[in-house]
Length: 453
Image (cartoon, rainbow, N blue to C red; front, side, top):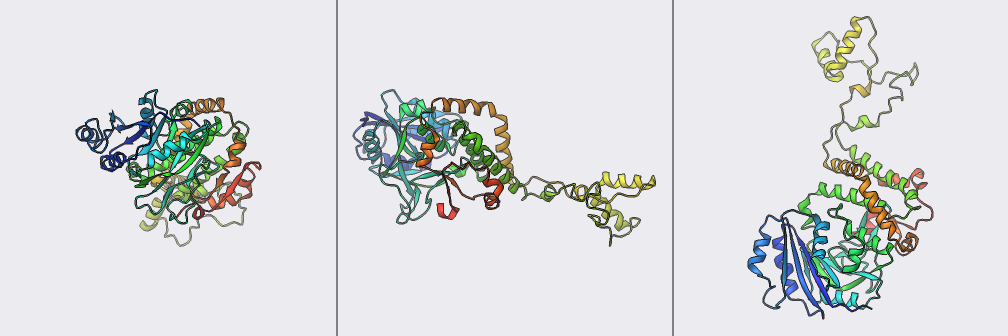
């Protein structure tokens, strides 16, 4: 047990003045947590007048009910969730024992901070953080109680959006693989020693990554259900756009797996991770116009007579108007394209027989129009361009490792959950299964078993 002397509540806000009004009022109504505390707000490059509003309304104090100082920190640019929170923690003084990270689009219950302080203050010294409970705005459904991680670095909030009366909410003091970044109290020293949030993430899965680093470094994370906040889920993240978030999910999941799996296990899980990333990219590509050409095997009867002499030509010319007619000319010009049309015409003038039309040449070239596919390819492009930086982060994490993954996964098995198009087929295949390490604790589940769809 390590008594806390001072804590800071850290709130990041990006164009969320309307959320801050409610959040700060709820903080003004907090019961006395029994320790000295302050509130830090980082205006993260907002354009909605957040900073001016705070200077005018609060003038260094929060409301009328408590003479509680609010510190405003301004940034002209958006550092993301990760960079912004790192700056908030860095802005606390050395007398601060722990920092409560709180989303701006939340309404903490009156006993929220006191519950977090009591849970962490009474916990053993190896507990680096405690995570509170998050419910929907009406307090009827679960937002976050316990998280789980998939084998490839993605994560879920267990029983997300299920009614509280049926949701699986951990007991007080239960161990968690990670604390939710929107409602957690973390020891300042532990956060800094672990490297804080990885700013390469910008947002999403940064708390999963931090939790894994805390556990591998020999510390633990516990649950404090009485520290409840109400959340307008997605209110801030929606500003990023659905497809931009897809880029963050895919990139950050791979980074989480790559950096944190210990040597020996990472090399064995990597093929399954790469097969999954490749399969999902291919499934998304198939939603783009002309993508059917990507499934053509050019040696399956299309060239070199590999289909045999008796095989019919891939694109029979029957029922086509004569090439000398205007209709025939238009059909062939459009179907072959100008270059292929002229090549065939010159071949005929030279006495060479026209070649059998190739579906590869005649098909429409693929056109990238689906935004989900663009996000997926952007994630791959980013990863390939930042391999050295990711490798350096991995080396730092493994250097401070004090607990093997085997002990972590005995507590928290990784999950195999078909989520993306094509996942069911891939995960059921013997070829994929052969690449899953046999000694990796693995739980299989359907998406509807994990969350409310």
